[in-house]
Length: 424
Image 1 (cartoon, helix red, strand yellow):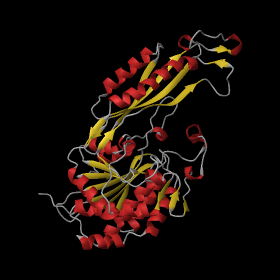
Image 2 (tube, rainbow, N blue to C red):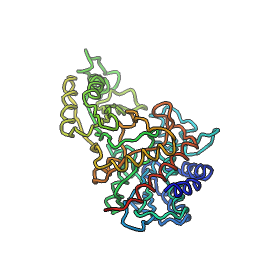
Image 3 (cartoon, rainbow, N blue to C red):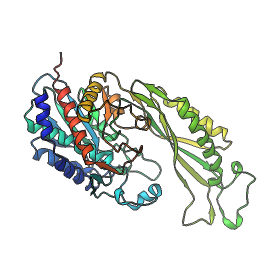
Image 4 (tube, helix red, strand yellow):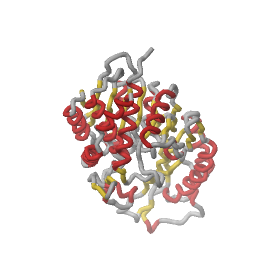
């Protein structure tokens, strides 16, 4: 095994990995526009002797799938990373980002040992790492007993259709992986290559998106009269204030009361008011009769949707404002079962490559949603492990080249371990 590892590691080259990661960043791939990058990956895999195909999800949207076939009755493993990026580096991002910085653009650049560009952390750097790992396994001549699948999937980013926001650009939250599995690209285990500061988790919360709307009365500004308080205001935007205050107060209690502890760490589920819609910026001379806010509630594995929705309704009712609540996305959370062999394989590889004991994963990386949950929904043991800057939590601005090399080595070692095991 050591000779095989050494041979594979010698074929993982920093320059090649950096070039591939930057090529991936340089292909814009917002949710709904993953076709071009999927074709690039299929072509790259085929050019390196790996069987590959594009799996069409809908017009212009593909998963990219590569497969190294096993030689016997061994365990199979999928590496999975998403192709779509959280932002696009365009004007539509401004309401969230505030400004567009160079690292927000789909244009890769190097500063010393760091690669910058939209998606390099989430999720094109980890994707490049396991593609290079798969190529190194192929070139090494090592014969795996089980299949190794390399999957770049569309539609992972947390996005959902609502109101006028319709179409493929608003269909995400696990769409690509669900399509992948529902159409037969399954395995015994799956490793989700996502940013985690080299931490490992097999439990993640679900997510519920709610629209909360209140009504007022439209009026031209000369006819507007002040109300004694926000709860009775005829201005729908002002009427929403007590609702948002109630939600903000509830969010802290909800997080504390719904912590989910498992042997790998702790989930701290959050509540966020992420968007508001009311009135028209170009027409502030009219009192708005409608205002809506859009809320993300993270749901730990032990909670059910009906209970969460009832709790939210009670919180809004206590605000004293009549409101309409609409659920428009639901994804359950899971703690993975039968993950122990894969967890130990990742930990062993981590020790081998990083020369340290794996550190406990930090709660923000167990408290987000990703495609682990889709694999668990299908009954496939899955873990998340991947590179990201190890300083500030949530720093998605860059990837260190050496960290990508370490990640590729860990992925290769995990593949060799799992796919060399023979089923009894």
